Image (tube, rainbow, N blue to C red; front, side):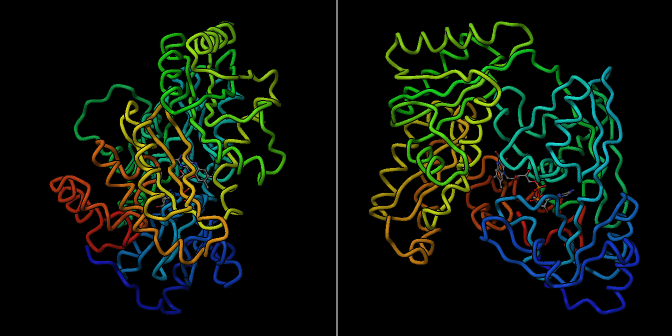
Length: 473
Ligand code: FAD
C-alpha cells in the first residue's frame, strides 16, 4: 500500500470540508490544532491543516465521500490517548475528531446492551451502565479521556480483560462509515447471528485504517454485588504466577484483575504520582494488585482464603485488603499512575508484549538480563496484566545518563526484547496496537499469508489509501 503524501489542501476544498461540519466545528488555527497533533507522552508530533469535528454519522459520511473524490487523506481520532501513534496525522492529513458523537443512543437492560456513539468517553459509558444497575467492564488508565470508538479501533484490553475479555468481546454490532462514504450498519443486539462473514470484527482493532466507527452496540453485564481488592507483597513473578493459580482455583470466574507490579514501578508511582501511597508497611521485590467480584457476599471470604493459602505456601509475604472504597481507589491510583510516573525518571523505552501466562516469569528474567547487558545501568520497569500474559515491559534510562543517547537505542532494545517474546510464542503488541510504532516490524513477525490477506482487505475497503495511511501496514 502506498502511503498517500497529501498535497496541500486547496482553500476551496478546505471550505467544502468546513461546510460539512459547520464553521464552528472546523479547527484551522495552529494553537487550537496543537492538542490534536501531539499526544500526552510527547513521543509523536504530527501536523494538519484542518481538524473536522463532525456531529453525526451523516457528516462523517459526507467527509469521506469528498475525501474519496479528491484523494484527501484522513486520520480518525477519538480521545487521542493511543500509545502507538495511530491517531496522529504524521503527513499533514485531515483529522476527523469523533468526540462530538457523544450520545448514548439506548440502554436496553432486558437485552443487556447499550448503544453508544463512537465519541462517548469510556468513563461515561461505564457510569451510564452503572446508573442502569449494569456493568460495562472495559477499564483502563485512560478511561477519563479515551472513547468507545478508539477502544474498539485499538481493541483495548485493560485491567478487567481477565474476566470479561478485550473490547472485541464486548461489541455486538457496529455502525461504520467506509472510505467511500457508505454507511455499514451492523448495529445488532443479537448474540446469535450466523448470516455470513463477521464484518464487525474487521473494523475492531483496525486502528482506523478500514473505516470510521460512528457507533457500537455493546454488551452489558450484571453489576457485581461485592468487589474486594488486595495489594500483595511477594518475592518473584514465579510466586505471583502460583498465587494466580490459587486465585483461579478459589474464585473461578470471580477473579476480575490480577496485576503484577515490580518494586521499581511501585516506587516510581509513589515518588512521582500525586497522592499515591504505598499500601504496605515494608517494601517487597514484587507486588500483585488483585480484585475479586461477586454477585453474592462471598468475595471477601474467598479473597481471605486465597491470601491465607498463599501465606501457608510461603508465596505471600504480606497483604492488605482495601477496607473501603477510598482505599481501593488508592490501590488503583498507584497502578494507573505507573506510566506517567516513569516520565520524571528520564527516557523510557516501552514494550507492550504478551507471552503465554506460564512463560511470564521466564520472560521477565531473560528480558531483564538481556536489556541490562545491552545497556548497562538501564532499569527495567515491568508491570501489567499477568492474568492475560500481557506485560508492559518498559525500560528506564540509567540514572544520570544522557536521555537522547538512551532513546536512540529504542530499536536495539526492541530487537532484544521482541526476540525473547517471539521465541516464547508471544506477541509484540498485546493491547496497544501497531500504529506507526510497530508497523515496520509487523511483516517480520506476522504470518505471511495473514499479511497478504490484510493488504487485500485494505485494498478492497480503501482502494485509494485515504483512511489513516501509513498506519498498521
Ligand atoms: P485514539 O488515541 O484517538 O485513537 C487510537 C486509534 O484508533 C488510532 O489509530 C485512531 O485512528 C483510531 N480511532 C479512534 N477513534 C476511531 C473511530 N471512531 N473509528 C475508527 N478509528 C478510530 N490501552 C489498553 O488496551 N489497555 C490499557 O490498559 C491502556 N492503558 C492506558 C493508560 C494510559 C494512561 C494511556 C494514556 C493509554 C492507555 N491505553 C491502554 C491506550 C489507549 O488508551 C487505548 O488505546 C484507547 O483504546 C484509545 O482510545 P482513544 O479514544 O484515545 O483513541
